[in-house]
Image (cartoon, rainbow over all chains, first blue to last red; front, side, top):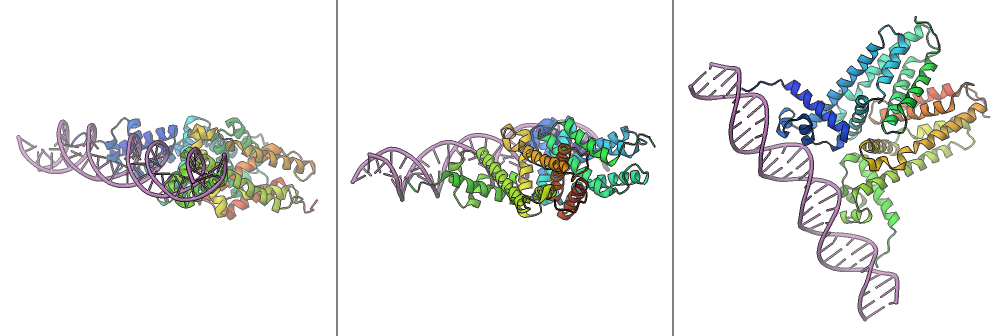
Length: 205
Length: 205
DNA sequence: GTTTTCGTGATACGACCGTACCACGATGGT
DNA sequence: ACCATCGTGGTACGGTCGTATCACGAAAAC
């Protein structure tokens, strides 16, 4: 047989091409021929590794979500594991804001997929669509820790606030994406809410 | 000449058909033939009143936004003009949550249009995309009034909180739309934030 | 060394979509 | 009464899109 190519790697490359071109022209506007051209391969190849367009889109979503998860994790890690709950939550929420090209693409495509999922049951069945639960648990846990450590107001409802922060971040992200609000303004709103949840306690403990 | 039909009325009927079918099958899946069938007219008629699909989509957006504005205004009015700032803000924010079919359709289509607007300059130039500024001003004004009346914490930043509430509502709306969160849960989160901004003062004044 | 299977290219097919074209009936103007 | 024109239907055209088909080179298996 020929070169015995790594299928998974090829698939990843093509999925990356899909995400790139979709980020530029919109998910609705990309066809298999566009993906092939972006990946520098022939149309047949795209068909070969993903038999159908639906499977290509599904892998594209997987690639997108995985990449974004890695990005967020890296940002959180860069903030320092010992940086305290606020810094961690802040890093997590701000990594999700579309401030650069990568997260802008993520927001655009994730929203596109979400819209499609409403009327496409194959996409709705995809587990990535319910993945935000993990983020919610993480933020809720961090807030709970902070509350136990006395860093937040006593009556704080950790889960309620976690849900609120995540939804706020998502809403702000969309506003930034459509050019309705500047990244700076969105960051300020987020900071404002974080200041409320974590009242100024200057100690690092 | 024949019946001398009212063009504006016809256009509105067809735009309504577009919104209905798009709400059912997704905006990306509707063609002119679908709109014609839904409106009970021939394909030629749709072409006659809107020369191009782009114009049809634009009028559809207009129809959608106008209808939703009327809905929100009606809800706010129903809450009572003298109901105080909190009830008004609450009515406004909750009218935007996709709890019934009408607002679910609105959320789905508005998000679809927003996504398209990112890569389509004709849509991005449409003024409806920046309309939320009006809602922001209204909420900010109401919060300011409430603060002047002593109904909210003294240090409250009215505009910052208004932006936050609107973005929160939008984010929660999207979560509900994709089935990630129940309308009840979203309402609870919204109430939680409103309780914070308007601490329990039981008097009606 | 032959054979079989994998990877790849080019191209064809059928369907659908937006748009354009052609025809005609009906009715308002004069 | 005639005619210009508005509203309407039917249908055809060009393009694109996803998918299927055919063909062939190349390397692993034996």
